[in-house]
Amino acid sequence: TKGEVATELPAKTEIIRHRAHRIGQEKPVFVYKLIAEGTIEERMLALQERMLALQERKKGLAESLFDPASAGKVSIDASDLELLFQPLC
Image (cartoon, rainbow, N blue to C red; front, side, top):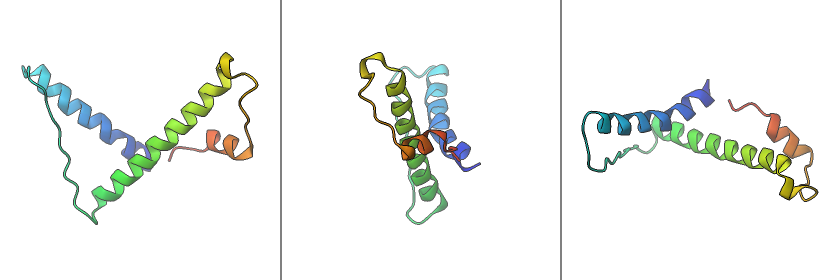
């Protein structure tokens, strides 16, 4: 699905970086992504950014619900509940 493809990209970048160190690289490794304008890759990157932002928002909202320090301070409306239960893809 779209969400799976979008969230796999950062993981693959990390795999590449870690692999370089496993084969003996001791200096810092830099991974550069060149994305051409108007391509599928550009759209996938935009989708990935939206998915990550949505995941972070959901995570923050869920954590605030179970945080004793924010008890009584969290106000949730119908749109927040819809966001929490919205599928990622």
